[in-house]
Amino acid sequence: MVTPASWYYVLIIISVVLLIVSLIHKKDWKLLVLHLNVAAIILPFELVVLILKGYQYLPGILSDPRLDNYIGSYVSNSFIVPASAVVINAFSLSGRYIIGIAALFTGIDWCFSLMGIYKHFWWKSIYTGVGLSVLYAISRWIWFGFQEKMPALLFRLVVIYLTYTPIHNIIIFLLNKGGELFRFQFYWTGDSEKVHQALFHVCLVITALIVTLCIGLRMRLRYRFLGIIVLILLNWVLGEYPIFVPQAAGISAYQLIIVPMITVPVVIIIFSLAKLKYLFP
Image 1 (cartoon, rainbow, N blue to C red):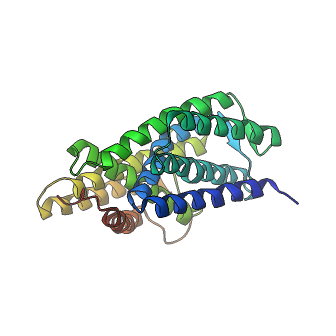
Image 2: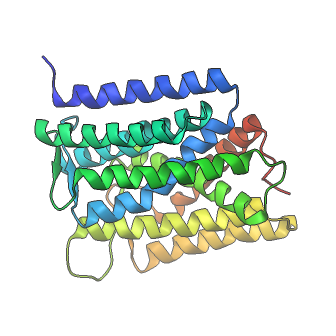
């Protein structure tokens, strides 16, 4: 029996296959960086659309509809869409193929909504096609930038930021499981889930910017350590006011500093494999 979850698992498998085939064909780990960058570009737009309830994913993987929606979002925006951008650039596909791929995703969007495994509210399938066409154009610009021996500083910083962000995000998602360990809150009225998501992503952006500057700019070692101190102070503020609210015993805001400590070495390894000399200039 084909379940709703099966379709999402198929998308994950296709994504992995597309990425592996692209890497084998091109023999260039910059494609992995591109994949992460595309996922990071999608993230803020996806957050806005989900908060404004433009659509809802219904993969049926998890019993909690809120978490199930997030899982569906990850499959779409961290797997299949970035993988399609990787294929376009790895094989240097022409404009007509790009339009065809965008049209294919428009059709998938429409079919999934008919099948009841993805629900539209104010969103329309055509928006998906238009958005992807723009996204693929941006991905091509990034890919061309990778071919320069030493691109402009701003480009290098943007790439570092876009590489760091999705890795940090997925680590938090896997550890926190949608709010089992902690949640963010503020003295606002309204949907607590929207507040949690908004505040988490604000913290993610601030953390990613600090990390990007510390590892992407030429500076003395003491200033890099200053970045760590700023992150610790940020986490202190989150726990002191309190914006960071533990949901389990033994959890504190200070422990958030562990995530960049894990993410930065991963980013360093990826940039080393990709032979992108953007870090610690």
